[in-house]
Length: 280
Image 1 (spheres, rainbow, N blue to C red):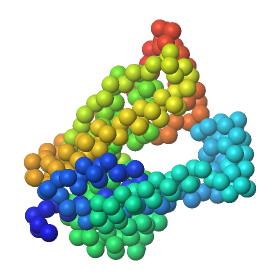
Image 2 (tube, rainbow, N blue to C red):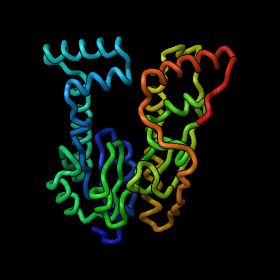
Image 3 (cartoon, rainbow, N blue to C red):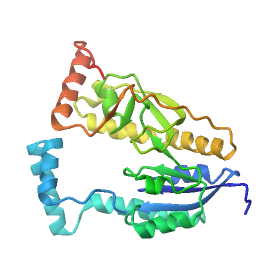
Image 4 (tube, rainbow, N blue to C red):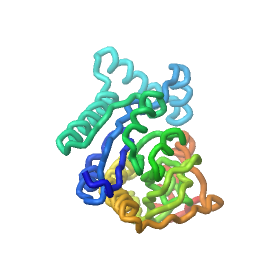
């Protein structure tokens, strides 16, 4: 193996097939490991789950969600968990076909996983759709790690992607590739691009969830391309690092029920030509 190649590890919860396909075509890069984390959600008690669901989805949606969950559990048919598991299995099969080393781990921060990560002797780590990882993980590769963030940093840090841009009446959404730092989405920027954002009220009406789902799906290809280009530039030593001014913009978090309801009102008002977007 060419020792001059940049040795890269990818940390993901799944769905990274297109990125891996593009990355494997780079002659300057060697993928030395893909680590798929199975613990995609924080463990919570039933009481914590109920409280959280009410805060973010409201009482009615919580009743429907938990009724459906218990019915599915009784029938042994948890579609959501099966879908996640199926996606991760698909990624493992994809890696095996490309002869890319792949490892399933429960938690990136466990002692065993840290040992495995160090054992790759990687030059660069890439986070592709993970939960927040601590410095004990992202600092292991020689050059540190980079992250794919669907938002125009520093103005939009955190998430979820697209929701807050739509809420604020933006006409575009950004995709950012940046180095990982201790604070969420604050590391030096390598590359960015923007995608036009427009809500077709005549098509989606009040069903903005469907719009978000479809729009996020459309971001997969440009995101994979931008992330691949960032890795290529790092491998060839021609990348630039742009320090973020975190006094600009803010870190966004999951919208609560009242904010979701407000987005519905805003979309209706914009369709009717009244009012304007709230300030960031």
